[in-house]
Image 1 (cartoon, rainbow, N blue to C red):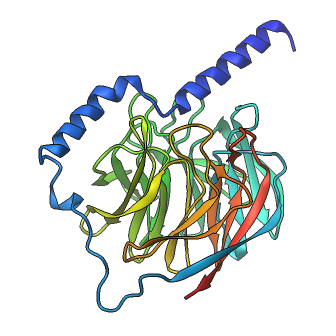
Image 2 (image 1 turned 180 degrees about the vertical axis):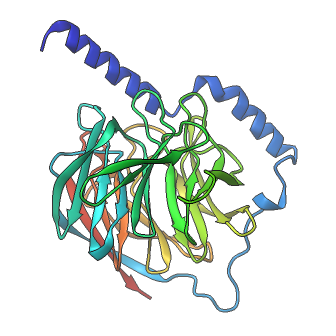
Length: 348
């Protein structure tokens, strides 16, 4: 590789690392102002009050333990990929970062422990999120050095087509599908973090704001559970968050449901057995990964239910029937992983 090309690649990697950094100097004042507003009562709206625990004899726990087994390996190690379920226990893995922190355009089909590259996205990207709606897979946002606003439809064979635009560019987002609608939670425009929860349907007029988080969040874990979204952890300003929020689409309310045992960001979220799993993740430091698997019950109970083979953040997680598939991620030594893991639950 010639010297100019080496220099260009290294500059690009530095820019990617800078964009992915949890600190955002330009937003510090805005975050401080938001904190002051909340402390003064400006954020005490009913939408953001703590949610009441479930009553009427609802069980505090539905998952007591999670078993983790190997389910194959990826064609190449990657982190920060988007993933969405297909029919028949399969999934699509989209984009991501490799060990050299180069963005990828790969579309990889996961089926029965096999991972096969089936196509390419229109451009390389990472930190996007994907969802399946009415049998179709959609990819939301993402970025390389800057964030992207695009929504892309991705077919199981690898074909792609433009499907819409987000109101602003957004990477570091999380998505979940509920009631025929995809919800896009938080994110980062490239210059500021987002506190919006967007609702999007393919046949609609575009993405609309369906709710507002009490604080901007990036890299949150999200899952649809019991007619609502649970939103766990994430990066707020320069810090990892320990808050778990419940979002009710019908009312637009965002309520504090629970608190994680410790602040957590870059974790993977998925629904399983009536609970939300929060898988791995890290604190604010880049090499503070955890191997812990937490379960959040609809009542707000939070408990540890298992452990990954190694501490891991930035993995992709997708629910496929009675299991959750975990692909890739970054370990505590900075190595990007290529394993596919399968998580299954034991009920109480």
